[in-house]
Image 1 (cartoon, one colour):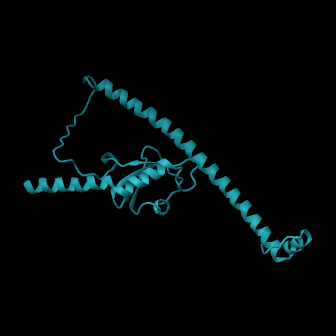
Image 2 (cartoon, rainbow, N blue to C red; image 1 turned 30 degrees about the vertical axis):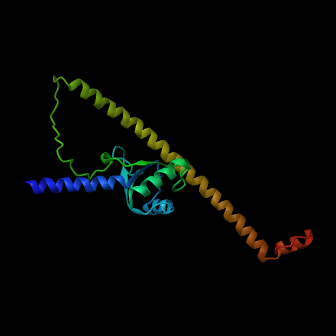
Amino acid sequence: METSKEQASKDYADFEEKVKRTIYIDQLSPQVKESAIKAALAQCANVVSVEFIVNYTIPYEIPCAALVELNDDVQAKAAVDLMNDFPFIIGGMPRPVKATHAKPEMFHDRPPCPGLKKDFCWVKQGDKDYEAMQKLKNLAKRQESENMALIKKLLEEEKELANRQQELLDGNCKKYDMLETLMQNGTMKNLAQRYGINLDD
């Protein structure tokens, strides 16, 4: 029995160390992948693992947040400071992402805390806590509706941003293609000679 308690304490101590070196990144674009996060943080930290937090209250699989484990707590602090001190955009999101230090409650696979006891009970109509629980249930339904509206707005913004970025990219490509054509057919050279411009400069 004592060995089991010791192992539980060790597992939770290891988990607490993991929490210290993990950061929570919010307001991520739905298009962001693990590789993008690793590349963005490479300047200040080495990413060990990335776990996207999915919002199960909506019918969309949108990873709008992530738990990012780094090498140590020093790198975690450096990453949080970097993202909070400067506009830090990952994946073309129009607004910078937000970063904080992770908390134990954010991990779905956290081990049980040694010595912590939890009690559960069913609440039925007529119990003293029934009205309070009913209010919480109604509040949760209202928040779900509001959350859905915000998610739909976010998706619309993402689509509009992607369209604008694609239009800008297409426009730049056309400009470079035009310049390349002018260089190849000699038009650029003729214009340079006409106006006395040295292209070698």
